[in-house]
Image (cartoon, rainbow, N blue to C red):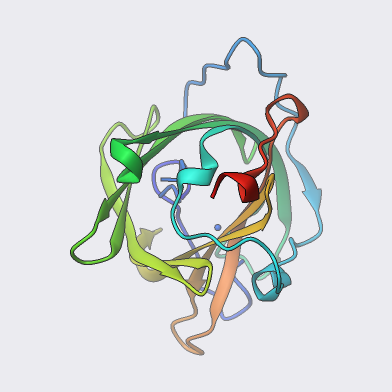
Length: 220
């Protein structure tokens, strides 16, 4: 999920998460209630071991994402560079669940690699296939584009697709994990074409504002 689409890497060194429904540009319009985005800054690589955490609420669909979330984004500054410098940005995203949970749309505004971004991710569910389809649209790239497809397995969302970055095609994976009732984590990774290892390049750490926190476990 990048601006145009979630772009990615090609070096053997770790690549580092779309584009892509989550959602994942140019001109940028902040909601009146949003605080100004902070300047992007270098930071340490995000924690990805969260996907093996046990005894947390499991994700079965995207219904629990309904509402407003504050997002801390960590992404590789240059996905094709051997120098794996991570950059932090702040965003705000608002989720709407439609048609009884068959559609999940989120509208995201903020900054990405020091540039304003405003995009929409559209996720649609096919009950016959038990499959979610992610499509992305942004002000910087106003073309509805398919990103990944997949489903939830053992409480974790796993979604796969391909993406072209700087003329090279990469296998791409999204992962969703619910850490607690008001905390979620998303990761984008590309598969190293030589080692076939999935290497994260972008993560989103989502937390609900205190004023909108929901007791998800009590609503299931």
